[in-house]
Figure 1 (spheres, rainbow, N blue to C red):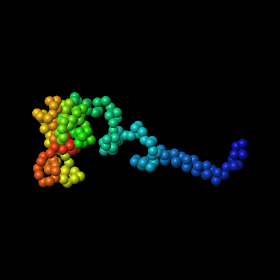
Figure 2 (figure 1 turned 60 degrees about the horizontal axis):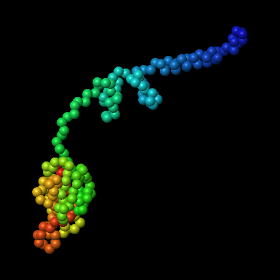
Figure 3 (figure 1 turned 180 degrees about the vertical axis):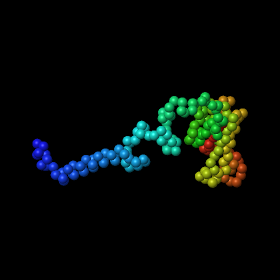
Figure 4 (figure 1 turned 90 degrees about the horizontal axis):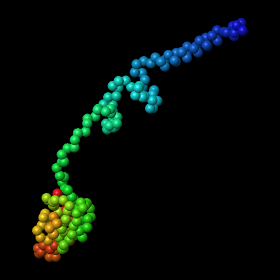
Length: 198
């Protein structure tokens, strides 16, 4: 068998076989011996870099997208402890804000559990479930008819007349010249308005 193998050996066969081993060995060597910083993003399959592949301090604050971390991403004690509840802040612009139709029904906002009644034309009494210190009533000047633009709305806190003892606010709406004849008559009228209360 040895003589048979020798008869098949030729210079070309030997060189081809050696070239094959060198080529395979050279590729394996190149895959293992990469120069420093030679691997780029395009060489890495998506999602294949794991935490173990990262060097110490490789990810810095500048490389983390803002607002992308959750409390669960931190070890215990890394986030500041939540302190005791602070004092309540000052009251806001209004404790209650509501817009009413001329009937006294709520158009927008809320009476916060309170109620409103209209004891007579242009007079609205409010019974609210909290102490009232101030109230401001307004009516839009952008009314449809120019002759209705002389309407005045006013709010009184703790009125002594018209409203019941349990009612804290009286809102009145008057029209300076209700007959539109140029005379001042200050007539009470039913119109929609907005009310802000503290």
